[in-house]
View 1 (tube, rainbow, N blue to C red):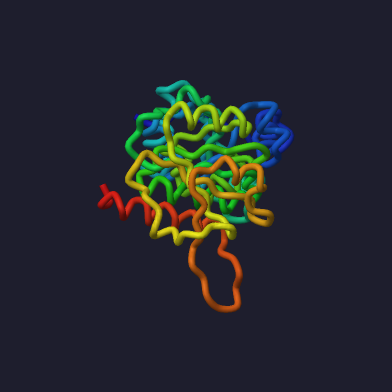
View 2: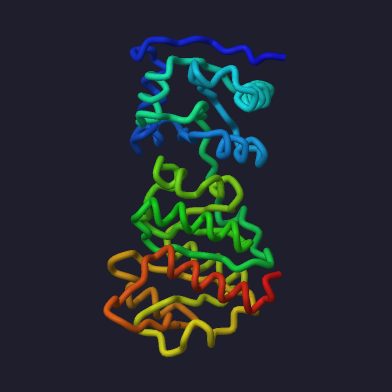
Length: 270
């Protein structure tokens, strides 16, 4: 059965204007929606039960079997199905060559109380992460390594920005994600008896010498400033990722991956 698309051809259509506004944080905050482009991301969203509000297919892609399948599934869940000219799809995605299908999806932020504190995986806390590419990459790494979830602490970048969603490669839809201030976060992690381990230039122990087999949370700091002294003082362990050579620091996403995979290795990649 073919999906039943409504056709829109004008850039001045109110729905098109709303969809285009989702590139900006203000538009995402006002609507509670965000954009995901491409069949892989939309398939992941539907598989994990995220609510697709609108599915947009370009004229050149609407008849493709995989687009028809996604549209049928999204339509069954109440999504509005829209077909637009290719130029309009590019305008919505802000790309010259957009994917055949784009979706506006309802944001889903968990509260700390909704996180499974007894999850067997390692937790990740990101303190004032400001780069959406880093955030998306960390979500992808967390997904690959079976992390328990990711908590954004204080003033972090928007996980629903176009850049973060693209960089996550669909892992945004798989990984439990919450946002909190540090006080609420620290109360939560203490109640869950999580050992908080931070990567820091002030660490005395190599990250390979830390015990990750106990219930643990890896805390990573801001790209430029790292962690403030008052936050480091709340940590159970400060560790150092060994480095040699001219560079004095690692990219945040790389450093998080090194920490997470060492913890997973200690657990036998279970």
